Length: 149
Image (cartoon, rainbow, N blue to C red; front, side, top):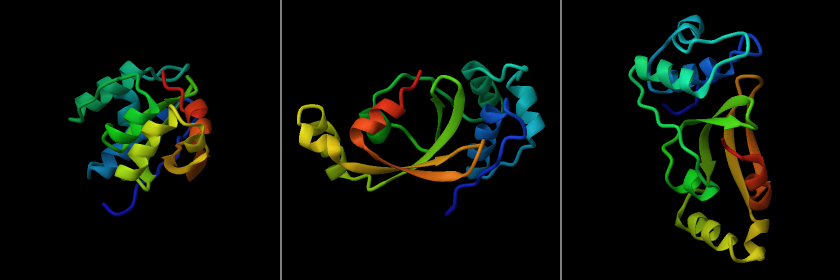
């Protein structure tokens, strides 16, 4: 699929099921949001990571909840993936621009060399509460923003 599908959440608690809907559509499967809400056991407080995982598994998508570093996110994680953002919102991370061995080397050096922490990277995010957007961030800022789990 050459584009990434984007669905808006219908209310403030639908971010998790809406993210799952985007990923399912990316892989060629269409589901009604209500179906995914039901499968994820959504409540008036929203949905848990376990609820999203159970819903994904029930439609045939394998899941794994992990705590990872930025370097692992860039180098090791299959995209698209759902990120638990700021402990209260789910978004889909679907592309990083410039992912190459050069970027990977620079990320590794950034831990020990302050010069590399000023490099800019583009992260492509699909937010069910808004639009798709690109985060142009310096590496030091990305580390602060993407505090997962």
